[in-house]
Length: 318
Ligand SMILES: Cc1cc2nc3c(=O)[nH]c(=O)nc-3n(C[C@H](O)[C@H](O)[C@H](O)COP(=O)(O)O)c2cc1C
Image 1 (cartoon, rainbow, N blue to C red):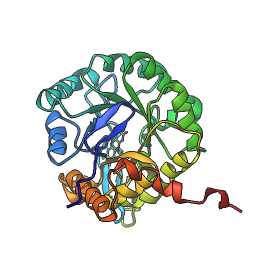
Image 2 (image 1 turned 135 degrees about the vertical axis):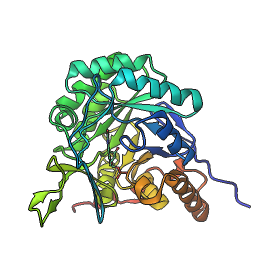
Image 3 (image 1 turned 180 degrees about the horizontal axis):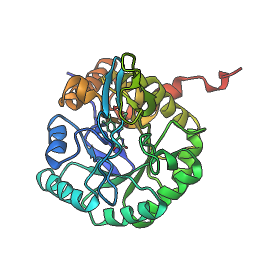
């Protein structure tokens, strides 16, 4: 009988028992919901994006289901870092072996620096700098859309936080490779690509946008090829050294395999929780494992970037 493939991977100083982790904004409002994700098989949890002060978020409706995914305009509702600390500590007490990546949302460089300092004393392995939320005016994409913004936000967090710093990039920027290089200059240990994409749904009978905020962030199956292409762009550039974490529409094990083959070391899963239930993390892990066995690979790490190695770059555009 063939040995089971090695599923363990390392991302920017964080060891994961397998490459499938919970994405920010889904199932992570409380310690209890994050524990459910781990019971459903997540190898690590990224928290909800947390700001210095409490944020109410946007008025409802803030969520709509589409044929190919979802639109949300939550507006980063969260209780603020002081109150959320209790949830992290409770989670850690119950599940000390599971890595926690704290997602940070700031509206200024100073706020990011303060958040980094606050995170230093918390029991988290890494932080994820949210440079990519399309649903807010001040933070999120405002930093992610140009390399200077990316650099200054990541640098500010890095100044205060001595462990892993992951930078969550947006596809809404002129050149994601430039954004990634700026994140690396700022001190990022890993790059996450991508966040939701700005979208809109209109109710034809009301002749009005469905979401109270008008536009929202598009996630789920429909964004997978775009997210995958961004990972591919980063990994094939030859200019980015930090490990990449893929995010966007990953719903099945084969979706995850595509991201690994495009160069991602791990993947974050959000919307698929709604499609397949909270056990989706175990399902995806088992499907990756079954693929590796079927194709004779010995480990998940072995397929990272494989499609890039096989692809004849020199011939592109000739
Ligand atoms: C309801 C909802 C809330 C989200 N909130 C956050 C957030 O607070 N911070 C963040 O970085 N990403 C947030 N995201 C984006 C996800 O983390 C993920 O990057 C994106 O949805 C693409 O992955 P998916 O297709 O697997 O959902 C949110 C997504 C959804 C659907």
